[in-house]
Image (cartoon, rainbow over all chains, first blue to last red; front, side, top):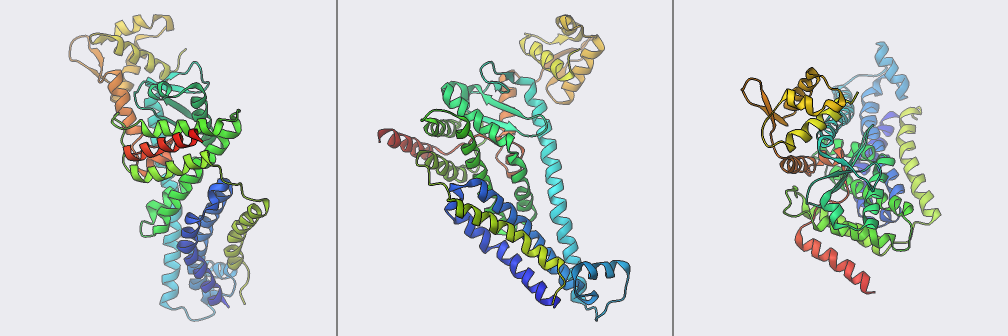
Length: 310
Length: 117
């Protein structure tokens, strides 16, 4: 029966909108394997959107048939409904359309806006940065605050401030550059994009804010891990931790905006602790269990939508 | 033939190095090793003016100057580039954000404890 499918999808959507993201954001294991946790977050986002829109569609299309693809086709083809069409069916269909357009539209807009801002920043930076002699593909910006960042995109730009170069030794600088390269190589900005967009689109959903914060933190941890893989020597973890502490503590009063400091603080501490006292990596079994759950999370709403009900 | 971006950089370098406003012809002479035509210099200056980096006076011929010193420019850029709105964090990946002094002290203590063990 279609109503049962609609109810299952609505329950799944509710779970993914609140308890599941809250539990995952609180869980301890994501820090032990940031990559697997990032996969889970993407699955939660995608499955959440799919199930809420799906629930509305299934309910709205109920008068036209038992299975969603066939019912949707009947409606588009203008066939008469098999059952009585009530007002709530039209409301559900309208909501489904609005939500789908909003989620996709915000994603596209957010992408366009960030791309444009990146291009502007890159053009402005290119006027003042100098290629670094010691570090390939790295530019230096004359500024006293210890800052490092990269602008992702087709032509990425990796920038170190002169304050950063003065503050850190060569090994620490190499660790910073390896961290930023990891962001670029693994396209972390694309993993963040949907969460930035949906946080803006759904301010009423507190889980969107938590999800964004968690994904942001995981992306940093993942970049730390990748950086460590490319660094040699037994002290690599401590070197990276020292670089983080030096850069985090040195920006005050140097003309760098410092909004949301408290929020950043907890995240920075978690990163440093993780480097100094590395947690045990997830067991292979736990890894596969998490990945399987992520897969199931995507499979479940898809199956509920496509299979004929009843 | 140098790209417009490189020329913009070269022109800004000269304007920053100059003591007083510079005429376009002087800029072209300064860039003689690149074989740049006067029209190209004007194109570059117009682009830089549109971006808000260069201003000109009303003398004949016009003379051009950087709107802000290199340091001011870097500081403004830093402020804009590193503004911590959520959108900004999607725009660029910063190595680590700044923390308040208390948190910074706590972090240094963490490192010191670790080194002592």
